[in-house]
Length: 611
Image (cartoon, rainbow, N blue to C red; front, side, top):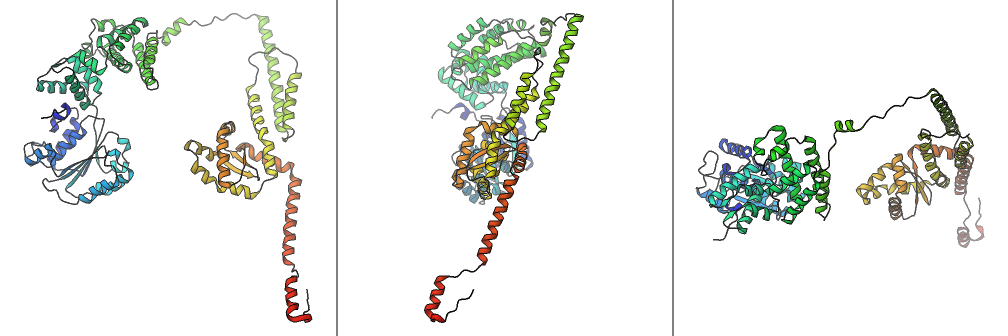
C-alpha cells in the first residue's frame, strides 16, 4: 500500500478528535442531536485549523444511520462510504478550479433531486472565496431557499473576499489558530500511536513554526521522519525548520539586555551559520522577551521552567520593563523591514545594535538634564532691553500699516507688482536697527506669496476673458464626464475640485476649490499636460489650462469687468446692432433676377414688376 501522509492518515473522524475548536464542534453536535440543522454553514479561519475536517464529519453525521450522541458511528454503511469518498450524497467541490457560473448552475439544477442513499444531500464547497461574481450570484437564491434535503457547507481562508449577501445567508463559524500546547499534545499522541521516539524540545520547535496550523505541524513532522526515520530529535528539528537553538537565543537576549552588542552579533552570526534565518531569530527573540516579561511581572512559573540557560530567570530579574518594550518594538520594526529588502542580514544587525543601547526614560532624562541657571539682570541692561523692544514694536506697527494700506487699494494687473516693489523699497529706506530673531513677521510672507501666485495667472485670466466665448465653455463642460472615465482613481479627485468657468478659442480658465490643491496642481506639470491632452482628444481642439483659486476668481472677474467696462459695453452694443441689421435684411424682400427672366420668357413684355 502506498505511503499516506500523516495529516491525511490522522485526519479527525469524529468531532471529539478535532483539536482546539471545542466551541464549534460542541455547537454542531448539539444541532444534530436536537434536529436543528440549518440549510447553509460557512466555516472561516486560517489554514490547517480543521475547517474541511469538520465539514466532512458533519456531512457524515447528517447521513449516519447509528448516531452516537451527535457523533457519527464510523461503522454503518453510510459512514464507511463517506470515509472512502464514495458516498453519492456528499459532494466535495473545489471552488479554486470550479469557479465559473456553469458549475454553480449545474449544482442549482441538481439540488432538486432527492438523496439516493442518505437523509441529506450535502455540498461541501472548499475555498469558496475563489468563486467569480457571476457564480456567487447564481448561488444566491439556491443558498437562501434550498430544498429541505440539501445542506451547503462553505469553507474559506479569506472571509473578506466572500460577498456579504452570501455571509448573511449562512451560519458562520470562525475557526481560530490552534495553541502551541494543543499542537504538541496532538503530535505526542500521534507519535505514541506510531511508536516513534521524540524529544519534547523538537515538538516545541515544530509547534512554533506551524503558527497554529495542525496540517503544517504534521507536514513538518512527516519531513523530519523522512530525514531521520527512527526518532524526532531537537537538532534535526532545528536543521529542517531553520530555527535557532533556544540556548543561543537566550544568550543573544542576555547580551542585548547587558548592552553587549559585540557578543550579540557574534552569537547571531553563529546561529545564521547553523542554518537559522533572520526572520526566525527575530521571531524567537520576541517570543523569549515576552516570556521573560511575563516571568518578571506576573511570576509565571510555567514560562520560567521553559528557560534552558542556567539561572536565566535570575539574570533577567532586575531588568526594567522598558527594556523589553523597546526590544520588542525594535524587533517588530526589523521584521517589517525584512519584507522590503533582499539583504536579510542587515535589518537584523541594525536591530542588534539599536536594542543593545541604553533606554533613557523620562525620570533618567530629568536627572541628567539640568535646568539652565538664571543670571541676574542689571538695571542698565534691563533699560536697554526695554528700549529695543519698544523699537521693534514700532517697526512691526509700521509694517502692518503699510500692508493694510496696500490691501485697501484697488488691485490691477499692471500696478500690483509695482506696489509690492514699493513696499520693499520703503523697508529698505527704514533706519537701521538692531536685528534679532524675533523680527521677520510671518503673516507678511504668506500674503506676499499668495499675491504673487495670483499675479502670475491674472494676465492670462484677463486674456481669456477678453476673448471668451460661450461655445468653447460649453464644449469643455460637455466632455467633463468623459475625462472622469479615462483618468485614474487618484487623478479623478482633481476634477472634483476643478471647474471650467471661462474659455476662449485657445485657453480655458478653471477655478480650484481649495488653495492647497491650486498650489499642488500648478506645480504638477505632468498632470496638467495629461488633462490638456484628454481635453484636446475629446473636443478635437487644443486648449491651454489657466488655474485660478476659487477665492480669487470672483475678485479677478469683477476687476476685469470694472477695468474693461467701456470695451464690454461697446462690444455688446456692436453685437446687438449686428443682430438687428441681419434681422432687417432678412425681412426686406429682394428681386430675384432668375425668377424675373423666367416670367418674361413665359409671358413676354406684359410682365409688370412691382415692389
